[in-house]
Image (cartoon, helix red, strand yellow):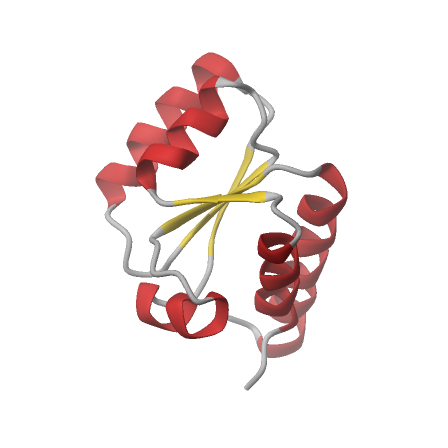
Length: 109
């Protein structure tokens, strides 16, 4: 199944509007650039808690979602293996959230 939000993440990546991986995502949060955090299904709970504390300090309104894809599936879709992705553009972030919600409503994930 081709998930539209993965395609949108790929488009955002090609536009240079994402940070992928722990260190670059933490840097994006500290610089208040991150608008959306996307966590893979197999990323550690400790990572989510760490990023939650960091976002509470620097970006309290930051939205964090966990998707059903694993790091390997993200790697296949985006060409980069990462457990966490920060979307650094409001328009891309809003559209990705819409597509994730639409996917959940359609398939009940």
